[in-house]
Length: 216
Image 1 (cartoon, helix red, strand yellow):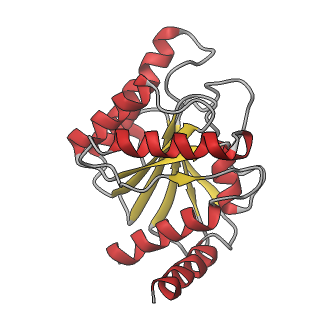
Image 2: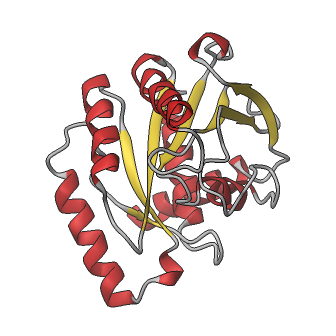
């Protein structure tokens, strides 16, 4: 029975991302956010964790979200919308932590991230991306605390899993899940992904399809 439900969700997730996703809006500040409509899912993570690559892999669009080898290139909240999905948007957030930009600008991006996470009523879930090679850092836990306080549901997604040996990856997943147990707003399951191989993308799409169904 569970397998049938999972297969159904995976198919719903595939359909959700099968169409032509497009850039919709860019917000450099809280004052310039688009009107609140439907449901939003945001992607947060340290600079260079692979947020843009993950969004491209999810939507099957190689150049939808801008990727860069220079950390900190995304400096705004970037919104994407799919065809016929009026009311479901993806939000690519500026990377937090290290960025090759002046400290004052990095501080303003960080403030923007925290304000958005605290005040967006239609934000259904935040996927906090963590590099599988390095695991959770203090700055990730700071964002987790903001989400706990805001009572925004969030889930940890390990990226670049193809670059970690299986035994090490298993330990990383266990350590991440153990750390999450202390955070009330955290979804207990840790998703494991690779934008390069496509691993974990069907499960991530299915998780969003489930969210849409719950709020629909």
